[in-house]
Image 1: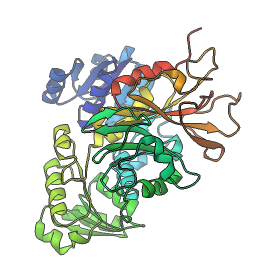
Image 2 (image 1 turned 120 degrees about the horizontal axis):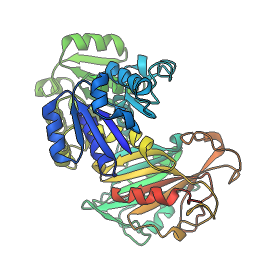
Image 3 (image 1 turned 45 degrees about the vertical axis):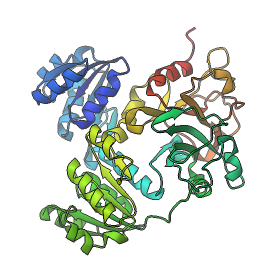
Length: 475
């Protein structure tokens, strides 16, 4: 696929890196020549220096024969104009825009083909805010992602000595679960190396385990398998930018939330917007200020500013001063690798969180949802099975029949009640929650046409093979 990316910031660079690794022809446009030079030295891609909303620049980028435009600059207006030009002047088939403002993001009429012609709108800041809010719901989780319109959740936890799951083989996991509940171990990582989740594998202290279960059962499953702490009631946020504001707005009704913002003007604005959040003007790296606001009594500290170093330092300080759990938002990948697993409980890369929404739009086959995991080295995807036993390599076969590579696990199927249907396919991303069931997949589980399969690839290089497996055979 020939793809043009507008914007070489953190998200644009991460998107380019991922799509380059999948054999796409990538051109990236930005007004910062130095930033483009760094990317060109790292990857085999084409760069164009210029303003992304100018037709002459877009023409130089090759929009006349482009399959997909991803407008992901920091300016909503630039992204909207670029999509309009791409549609009207260059007839680009598919156009994706990053939009921060809810005025643009939520207005379907404004994004319609006759107006700004945006096929898909993305809001990375909202993706990150939703992700952080989900982590608050499951305090001991390292990652929490949803599939099938929220019916299924994949939760990563660290195994500690003394927990009921520690020292037990995977095949005995069901014995520990409450009656009527089921879960699957989608992946196991031991000392950062993937171990195929065979039933005979015994889970050890320090293992990172990805559990997949129905979302309604997550709390019960985690309580049964691990020492889950009490809920997060008191949350402190450092940074009142787009992400910090969104997280506070999401949490304030069910939690006691304090938010630090350095800028007095911004703090006054937030105080007016966030009626149930205590907004404080100050620096979260100020030890005295943290002590005054009782950081030791906080259940969770979220460092969400735009400065990686400040986020790391404030999170480390909060942890040292007694906060139970801390999260730092970190853009630089090298910093994420260093911070994760130490005093900082969760080092979160915003680019890796938001990239999943975009990947689902460019995957081959009928992929409904994609989540990039473990700093991009692993991936979980929701992919729809179509056809019959003659036209499909998966339909009508058991999971064991597929002879999947050891790094690939089909963890669950989402199936419409009543089994296979001859009704026409609806929007691939939509799941009828009332009429669908979650089937935890075993070796003997048979895949039906229309099933949404939740597939975990502990090695991202296996994703292409999975996509080919689920594609219909050529007649």
